Length: 493
Image (cartoon, rainbow, N blue to C red):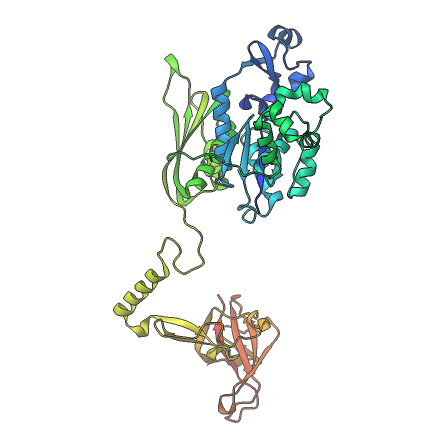
């Protein structure tokens, strides 16, 4: 299934409108002395796009004014893209601060499109931004839905219906002709597609038709994927001087998200991270405070690292204000994929494992290197046998299997090689202390002729709270005893 996610970030610059700033003060971005973007608090005060600087100061004298910084915008967008690499390696930058992600191969890994979208929103929110998400079978369709705020379309039929309702001037090549389209009554993309293609190409050019064909899945699309750098170092300049170390956790978390994306892109795990807390520069400059964290086991997930940083920052007393953070990953290694085998990766291939077993057999002897060979027998002492590891045995599919209800019954971790006869005291079996039956009986009757067994097994508990696996013979002893005898057959861990 081919599926794209379009991630439309707010009007640039991105880092001005984090949730922390929008709640503290009215923020306004200026370009050529005119308002380019305003925070919700500034808009509530009457600030509108295109307004001059003087008008903003007359309405909101305490407003925070920022000049547009394209370099800072690009760095913020790159940080978001780096964090998204943990969900798919195919992330590309589109027009107007929009990121496109090919997530078709990631849906099963993250539990479906809804769960994946929730995780992406959480990551973007942790980075300090808000975004509009859309899903579509085509990349350009996802871009249009994200810019138009039209939600998700998982199939081509749904995508066409949603695209047909979008404004005709939404695609970039159509914006110079917005007045002409409005004049002829062409208000939606559906109406735009119904216009004669030769005439539309002569009037608006071939770029508009190319965008429409790509959005509706009529042509293929090619992209330049964002490539992660060979080494990782991420920087975050704080908006103000921070005096409390625990207040740095949100900024450190955003850097860890970028590192997680970088590690997943290169299939690496980090064994050591270094967080630098930068202080004042200039005449009062001082070296940064270094937090060096060495991990006992390499990881590529940010949850554990966030907990470690929370503990370290909570116990740290700052000697000076912090104005910036720098995160580095000096020690990385290949990501170890979890394995259910005896020798987890990177322990070598199956052939390497057999070579090692052969070496053990040569050094210790074949009688000392054994493997378990379970058998379908109800009698515990015959339900398994140990054979040399090099001996060829039948596969599990060829062996008779016990019923599932038998396999679910409790069995001791240590089965005695030979059952031990128990003494009787006050009509109760005795093993260091009187044993109390802690389970209902499990009856086992198996074997033929002289090897037949008829036993009732119990889980018994001693006064020291240890648990034992005992059984009672249902046939009286051959020596003439009238009462059935009790035996200890196994010990529970």
